[in-house]
Length: 247
Ligand SMILES: Nc1nc2c(c(=O)[nH]1)N[C@H]1C(S)=C(S)[C@@H](COP(=O)(O)O)O[C@H]1N2
Ligand SMILES: [Mo]
Image 1: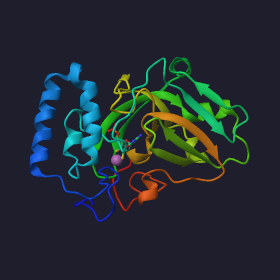
Image 2: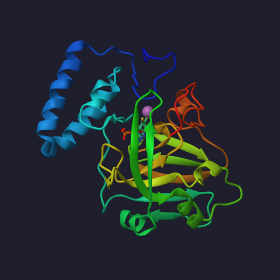
Image 3: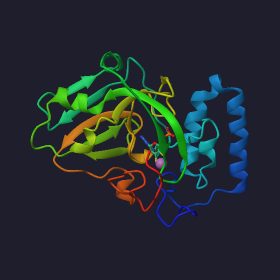
Image 4: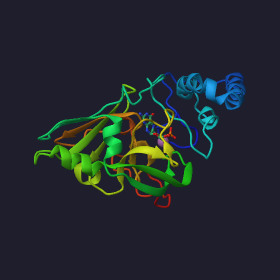
């Protein structure tokens, strides 16, 4: 699948394995340049285009186009709804005493934690010194009252497809956030706004974008890419057969 590694790529899914032709890649480059020129107007259409193009792009080239600073755009869903102040909700449920449902303003009203760490994708790209800011996941877990029978957390997303998981002790770490801001700006849609998970010490696939559900479960239920071969315990430099420096 990914010519660079023998492992299945988590980031360049190819449903049918069809190669992307040079003509398609060049066409996408052209559209990328247009998108940069007319960014405010085309932003939304461009994002959904990239969502579908990224599915068919084994080179990762499309993902590089609109987002500066070394980030690539990833989505396993071809289109993702936009959620805002009115429509966004984050639920906390499963093995808890007090299930909860947070609006964005409720999340913003909680104490915010800011962390500056490197971002490391398991395919190799790294973005140094990236500020993330949001609510510690541990705070939401404490508020919900995690039952003794819970051993893990499952995360679901309003793209309708992606999922992630952490053990309960990983989820309680101080460097795991429900992030509302990245690079000192509100998280935009492409980066998983209005809220994404941010798991600082792990490969970036753990940081589920468009986060909508936090469910306490008895055991770890492997997430989207983990069902497709990636490590559940995704410590940077100590998993997935890689030796990157820790973030
Ligand atoms: N919902 C959702 N979250 C996701 C993904 C995805 O496809 N869907 N991709 C993951 C992977 S593999 C990476 S590297 C990062 C990419 O985040 P970015 O698009 O903000 O660069 O998001 C992670 N979270
Ligand atoms: Mo990734």
